[in-house]
Amino acid sequence: MKRIAESTVRRLSLYLRFLEEFEKAGKLTIASGELARSGGTTSAQVRKDLSFFGSFGKRGLGYSIRELTGAIRGILGLKHSWKVVIVGAGKIGAALAQYSGFPDRGFNVVGIFDNDPRRVGQWYDGVAVADVCSLEADVRRLGAEIAIIAVPPQAAQGVADRVAAAGIHAILDFSTAAITVPPSVTLRSMNMAVELEILSFALTEGARQ
Amino acid sequence: MKRIAESTVRRLSLYLRFLEEFEKAGKLTIASGELARSGGTTSAQVRKDLSFFGSFGKRGLGYSIRELTGAIRGILGLKHSWKVVIVGAGKIGAALAQYSGFPDRGFNVVGIFDNDPRRVGQWYDGVAVADVCSLEADVRRLGAEIAIIAVPPQAAQGVADRVAAAGIHAILDFSTAAITVPPSVTLRSMNMAVELEILSFALTEGARQ
Image 1: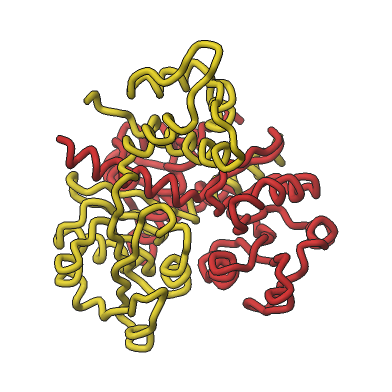
Image 2: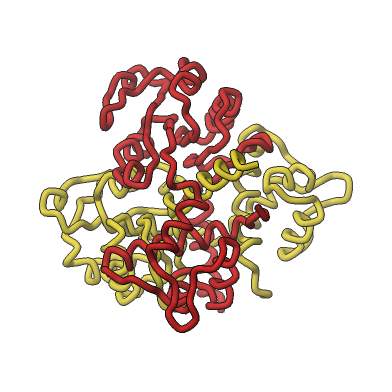
């Protein structure tokens, strides 16, 4: 299959959000224009994005929501259930460990780790916080595939190195550090600091104008 | 001033992360190549990004970390302190309300709102959760400038509409909904669902190859 750009994957994920909402509302079909608005893009872009996966739309009738949802979920690997470990059981890590949106979407938290003895042994939705010293062994034993990093910034790179060495190929980083990973690992950052600074810049720029 | 692209603002924010770490470590100057690695970019890109703000670097000597940090903080609007409201005091909202990274960076949480009577009145770092029915009045009274949305996806658009109507021009959305805002409002999304699906796609694509 042709390699798909990250920007396309991101739009597919946004389309999926909207398709699921339309499906819940009982709609059966959707026009490319409606999907375009959800992804902040154009009808032409939607048709191009979806053309990767064969032909779903019928001219004048729009796309079948059920078919399209299924196709996008397949492409994004969401027909599979993924095993996730969370490293860091502080406020953010603990909130994530209890976030019902993860299992709902097929991301199952199988391990939580911390280096603070006061946190080790606490239970979150059926998973006990383990000592981070067993991280590598547990990642292998559990067959974990995705690591969520929720440790202080200065500890983030060390954790990334350790989970990568243990065979994890996908990391979601919630620390505000700028970490690097080997080419075999896909890293996504939920960097609040960057997003807030983009907002601060926009407000400042607005005031300058 | 020339309009700065969002991708540039994002890189400036990443450079700032690294500059602050180097500053803490007692370094005085930094070469464009070092900054490039931190932003996942090239020396030429760094020099271009920084050229927006005048001339900081000396050929062969690198950039003064103190000057560059100050200039980037100025551009990003971080010499100002911003008033932030959090809407939604569930697990994620409560974690954010207590997140020390916010005040450290000049983002001060001045209000927290929820529609659940069991949450209203709870205190987080000196701020009591208020009933969301007073959201508009409180946003105006407090002079809030940034809203963080941490409500369930189906409630996110309604909250965005309300804070925008109350005069907020910057929103950070933690719900996994795809919401829209008027052109006068800058919206940034911390969309875990999208980031996890990009990881799921990368893992699936890796397995396909």
